[in-house]
Amino acid sequence: ETGVTQTPRHLVMGMTNKKSLKCEQHLGHNAMYWYKQSAKKPLELMFVYNFKEQTENNSVPSRFSPECPNSSHLFLHLHTLQPEDSALYLCASSQDQGEQFFGPGTRLTVL
Amino acid sequence: AQSVTQLDSQVPVFEEAPVELRCNYSSSVSVYLFWYVQYPNQGLQLLLKYLSGSTLVKGINGFEAEFNKSQTSFHLRKPSVHISDTAEYFCAVTRSGNTPLVFGKGTRLSVIA
Image 1 (cartoon, rainbow over the protein chains, first blue to last red):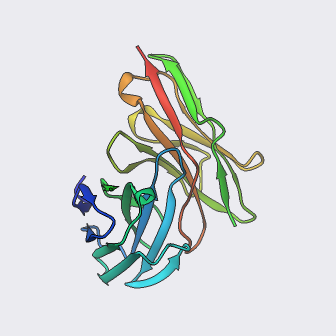
Image 2: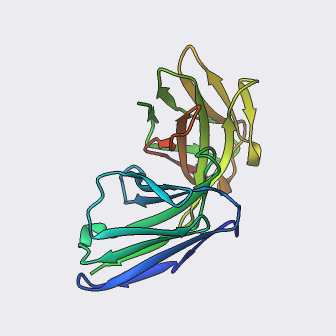
Image 3: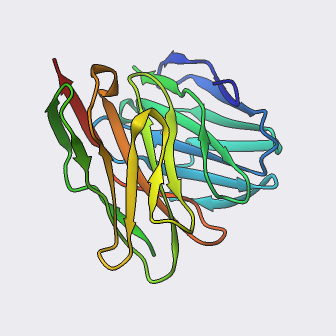
């Protein structure tokens, strides 16, 4: 599946590091999403962007900072994370917030 | 607001046996319904969707689901499972409009040889 790509696929970082996750969609969609998937927890919607504008922020801590420079790219900037932030971070895109297409995810480990 | 309940967190089943994964939703308006599958270390892949029309929806890999408005259910079925069907399955709902998907907690299907 190459419709939605995510890099890197795996990331290990210390609590004082700054890193960024990247998502790119090649489907011409106008909405993009970040989700957090932790073990034994439901999928958590973090952020939603429509036409590059953020339309939802589900009480996400400020140590997560999204950026959407255009409809095809979405970033998640990370700084001073905690070990409990270790999870699979999934990016998705859709057209007018219908069916969502997911990327493979970035497996993040915070030491 | 919508919500989704997947009644079973884990479902073990023998190979070639039938399986049903249950999903119930709550919403005061009409909805679109989805089933996604997640294989280990991968993202979510769409299995099937109900938008309107026939209440029996056929998807990929031999799966089907039936939309039941009176019971607010959208259960997923397969008549004969394979080892390769072992994965996590997520039910999701959205309003017929401009709102994000709401996902259930997922059901882990384990197919036993």
